Length: 241
Image (cartoon, rainbow, N blue to C red; front, side, top):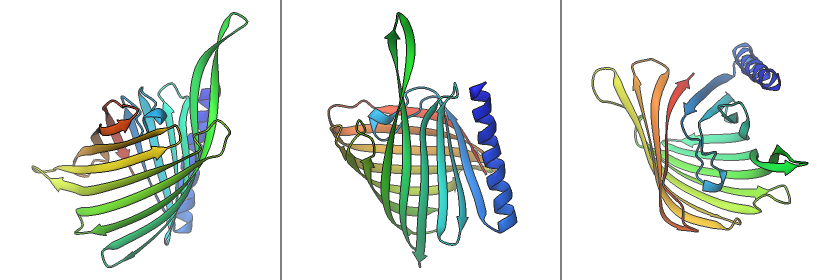
C-alpha cells in the first residue's frame, strides 16, 4: 500500500511539473531509465542491483531545477537529488554553477527479538558544482566538472571531491535512422570514507529516428584506487522527453 501511494505521488509530481511548465512558459524535460545494475561513480554509493533512475528539469532563463529520483525495482528509494543550477554561455563556451541537497539510503538486516528486521539508514549531503565547457559543434563538446560534497549527518561521509572530464559526441549517424551518442570520461575521487581513485568511464546510447527510447551501456574501469575497486557496468533502456 505504501509503495502504491508513493508511486501515485511520484506520478502526480510529474503531471504537476508538466502542467505548470506548459502554463507558465517554462521548459520541462526529463529522462527515465531502467537498468540491470544501479551504479555510482563512488563505489560505496552504488546500489548493485536493478534500478530505475529518473531525472527531470524545469527551466526558465539561466536557472534550472533538476530533481533526480533513483529507486530499486522493488520501489525502495536508493538516492534523491535536488539540483538547482545556473548556466550561462558566451560564443561556444558554457559555464554552470549548481547546488544540490542529496539523500542516500542504505539498508541492512538486523535480528531483533529473534526476528529479522530491515533497518533503513538515511544520510544527507550537500554538493557544490562547477562546470566549464566548450562546444566544438552541435555534436561534439567537452565538459570539465568539479563537485565538492559535505555530509550533513554524524555518520555520513564528512566530505569529498569529484573531478570529471567528459567528451560528448551526440547523435552521430551510423546507418539510415540509427544514431549513437558516446561519452568517454576520466574522473578522480577523493573522500573521507577514506577512498580515492582514478577511473575511466564510457557511456554509449543507441537510438532510432525520432523514437524517444534509447538503449544505453555504461562501463566504469578503475585505473588506480585506494582501497582497490572492481570494474562495473550496466545496460539500460532510456525514455527521454
